[in-house]
Length: 263
Image 1: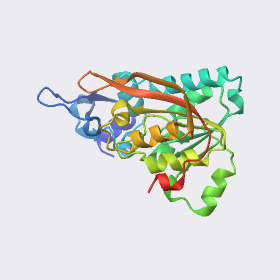
Image 2: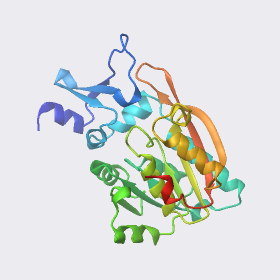
Image 3: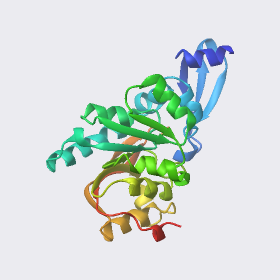
């Protein structure tokens, strides 16, 4: 282990955001530079390189929550609590599938509001390692699988859990969780079920090319999803210090998404 790697593992490093005066980076291109103590080397990490980020204890929290003021896990879970409470349901009775669970920050927020049964799934191997390292008691089970490519037995195991809620936070779009994966998770839920998620506001606009705008609007229009909350809010800051707005959505699943909607 070199000096820089040692600094990364002992939290003895600084996070430097690039000077972007001559350019504006899209979220998918944002990055930071980690600098070891006493100037012992530098490492450039893209914000969407989750394997590298989760491998370094505390980096995700320091970067996104302390430096860039991300509020999404608490915001989405807060809206979920409001909706469930208004419908005279019990949070402790939820069996939540946390899709794109990452390092467990959403699972931790679900635990804070009273949810007792949370199951995580992600495609990034280091996500599970980060959960086991930093939040070992949050999930009943944590799977590293591609939800669009499950075996028959894996799908049957998940269906047997009778999930009645799904969360997916800061994970839709940008190639992380595509529409097909979102639908696969949604269709694993029992009917009815709650769903709480967020998405960048541009992915709901008429100019969206990700497929989410068409999908979500069709789910609402066709009575597949009954929206209870749809609120625009500040997700976090960009590396330039500008607010990035997302839309929080909480609703009730009324039926599966038909197979022919997603090719």
